[in-house]
Length: 395
Image 1 (tube, one colour):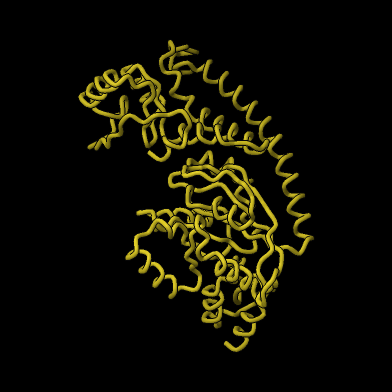
Image 2 (cartoon, rainbow, N blue to C red):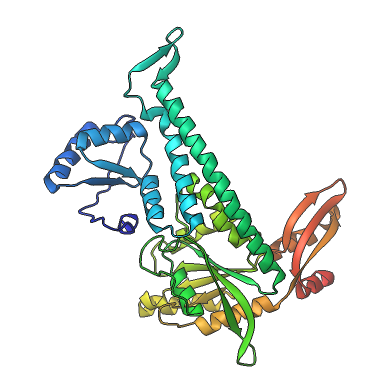
């Protein structure tokens, strides 16, 4: 429902959970259910059917023919939303690339309705083989052009990153599940006017702003760059992850990651696990410090709110806030400032196999960036603070 609400112009008439003992290859649903839904679709004047899952090209064609309506599966719907939201040149190119990659993956069966074009002995070739190959070539050519254009944009972004690296401003990245409140938090901290709506994927293009953090003794402290990023979602199609990798890689250069969670959502823990999985797949190291920002306290009832505050008090990496009302933001900014004040340095050390406890401690601290195993032990690349190095020496 949330995905459907995120696409402008759609009015959801009804939704239904259909339990499938087994998936029917040709129609997805059984014949009885197809007929039942057909009657309801016709009676209500439905023009578009959404399926929250993957639908094969054959299933899509057969269902559209049976029901007389257009059908979109989960991936197609997300692509439609992304196409509607993309604003920057890079965002538009990434959406086009993702759409073409998805379209190409569905060509093999999309042409089974064509007359078989035989070649040689009849078992050479297949349904619509010539048309499939022509379409593949056309798509591949377009993909190649898009990738070249994207490479130029990515090179430009890398140059911008290199320029920022020369400026002593740490980067703080806001990440999280879509609709967790990242843009509202971003606007509240920076005073910017990034689109912030109660809908999925309101932010698609990354936005960065400079922010003055409060100092320990009052007034303004050090300056940081705050980055707002595209929201994650469970089951994000691989085509989209690949296409948006260049944008998401902004997170890799961050000095601090703020994982924003909608703590009022009933599936907040599951959403947090999805975000953690995507961050790992992007290559975000455990050495990069992270803060869990429990957002939307204003939506909690008194009992639930009190329980959350007790939990947060026992976990120093958790900061409960309401981006809408501003509650908890001074404490969050102070925490960010405190973490960034601990300057980190890169260092390489070698440990023998007899130093297994020391190696385990370094991994527990999250300071290991890379590790190689040699004949006599480990070679570890570390990124740590002076305080952590001192504790290791004592260890």
